[in-house]
Length: 479
Length: 98
Ligand SMILES: Cc1cc2nc3c(=O)[nH]c(=O)nc-3n(C[C@H](O)[C@H](O)[C@H](O)COP(=O)(O)O)c2cc1C
Image 1 (cartoon, rainbow over the protein chains, first blue to last red):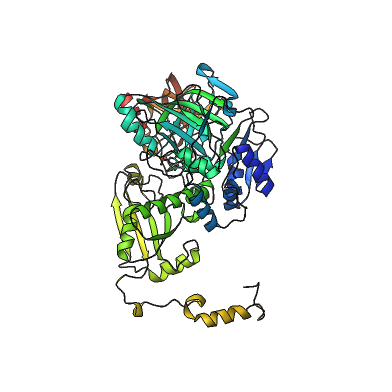
Image 2: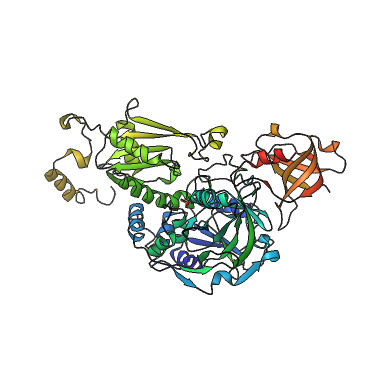
């Protein structure tokens, strides 16, 4: 079974050798970010910074909870060396067993309470993550909780939030996010502020679920319970009518204002660039802050892959995409989101290929908000998780003249795609391409090129003979 | 000692000299570094040309730091927000304040 809080997860990481404690004093102003970034780029461990300049002893920052596949495995309660394919399968399987949350009256996340005029977010060690960011980002690996005032449905999303003043945050849930849809459809027409909670420092599965693009009406907390194999405990906020994970480290309670805005961004983002999203976010008036004694702030120092976004969130995105493609009748076998492609490049393997299926795939990825700009579709004999095989299929089977289809759109594109111009980003204008690396459906079988590989070229009796002699031929273990 | 601030603009060319309303972040070291203020301030391209002025660093929307700081003299601190609905352009709202 997975763990129920961040402290349990830190202990599990320590046991598996995937955590390093930084005991010397480090500066929240870029030093934490610089160490964290280098650690990701060296495929290093999660880092627990135990002594933060300007902050009381005991206040700490955890960077990179799930920035490697090993840490994802630990989060799922699996052996650290579990393969990527097995991690995908485990996530897909476990999260279907939904478990309802339980509500509690007292909670660790409310050991310390600041409300009203006492609110001072500078009492928490929010880092200046990258040089050149718009400010100190307190919400980088968070869960943003909002509630539909009519149906009571609660949405969880992971969106960046920055300190504006001691009692205000600015944030950037994209204009196409569920938070934005809820604010625009339910609160703005009534000129009402929207209650919001910025939850920081749960065990990672709750956060991963928040990155998963569920449809409105689906309760993310139940999926998180299913993944954990244990219900999530929820507690009511002190100053807002919202339920939040009771075992969180920190909860910032407030309201998204309907009629006031302030500067947000820019921020070094998940595609690996700071490409210029700024000044078009939301403003939150903080009404209360609650936290555990000696709070641990979770951080994801986003940038070039790998990091928590390109590893863990790629997994959640892939499973969601597979669900969606199946719903649309695409004969999908596997979906793989390679970390190096930062959810801009997706690999889809299909049971039956051809241009019609490739088009269906493109239509799925561009139907609503579009986060993906390139999709490679491969036949079922290509292992979607093996980029060597994918690249080989792409190089040889995708016809440069006929095998690439494009879809252009405006108002629902990804504002963070670095190759878009500033004007395109602002207008959410973009293009997605599907690269059809499958054989055309109308080719006769006798004319389809035959792959020259050990597996596909030789008769079974000969393959068996080769394998039977492999060790005694002196090839075992080395190849 | 001059205080130091930073402001963000979409393009350097969109920042004008004279009296402007803008968001600035306080670069004074300590636990409140980067706190935001909305101010009415006198801006000058050459810091020396502003008596009793402070330094204003300027970054673009990608966070690119322009190598030369301007001068700033804060005339008035305003409540730290501008009118507008979520996701509207803060810079358009700032322009409308004038
Ligand atoms: C580390 C990390 C940071 C993210 N930051 C943002 C963000 O600032 N704004 C945003 O709209 N989406 C962000 N996302 C993506 C959303 O979490 C994702 O789209 C999720 O589905 C949003 O929830 P929703 O579908 O309920 O809107 C981030 C994802 C990760 C992994």
